[in-house]
Image (tube, rainbow, N blue to C red; front, side, top):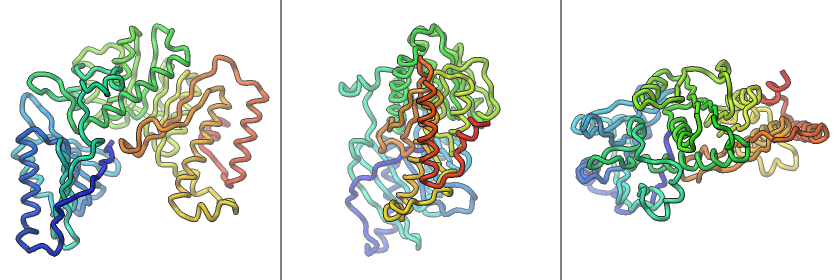
Length: 419
């Protein structure tokens, strides 16, 4: 998943009224700055956007540096609407390809280095302009040994060899170091493990000698590997399974797990609607789109999971059904407010339904918005004592009243539970 880049207040703007030579030089100057950043090891990340080419579904391109078999290369992540494709190129070949893409297929390029940020923008007529600025503190990579970050990063060790296979670290003078472009992702992973740790304690699983986890939509396996490694470090017999639809990612993660002989860690190709593990203590589903989140929650409920952790996105089912109550029409006449209200109602109903099923439930922001826009989490921990019939009836009445107030006819999790 691509993280949001905070843009600084740019200076040294080359305006559209600049002489033709200056305009022509803007692209060349950007390319020289990129080459310099690579040469002095200050390169962090390059994002190409505003795609104007002919390939259907292509949205943007993210470029980061990797070390493969001792050779520095640039890894190109081509992001499409329905899939991602990664290709690696030696530096000279990568720079030549980027020169071809700039202006011809992508009209915006954002270069992030350790000392600053540079943005190259092409107008509709293809005229380039260059903006340069100092990098905001939040955009700079985090030093692993920095005193104020030690507490936040205590859950995971960057020295673990599998991070190298997953592209989180690279070798610097023979030692593993965080890839600068992965600094925000590393913060997200550690924050997730912090929440995961607290959830295990409150669920009673902290006392269990073994813990079975299923991570649906595991993607590149960052969280899957992190959970397995952390659980093993706690002395538990961890059985962690990443379930992913994309076969190439299943093979990538499976190969890394096998290479490092990580017993109890596996990756299967499958879907939350059909996958059935023998035992499930913790169900994870991050960024499951729309009603896929409902299917994931329902699966966790059916399997009797003690902990359910979801990060929902793409709230599409409820919004078209919503009828704006007269009192709220002045507020919800704006599309952005209606969308935010639909998200709140959708996830609020999910939380109430989980509570009615006997779970203590929280909905909260688990990472700062600057790191990712998909930053909401639904955390549900199974209660030790069953819910009383009176409380369950009260919750069901609240759900019915909310649906009536907004004119909602159907909510997928409630439908699945009723069936």
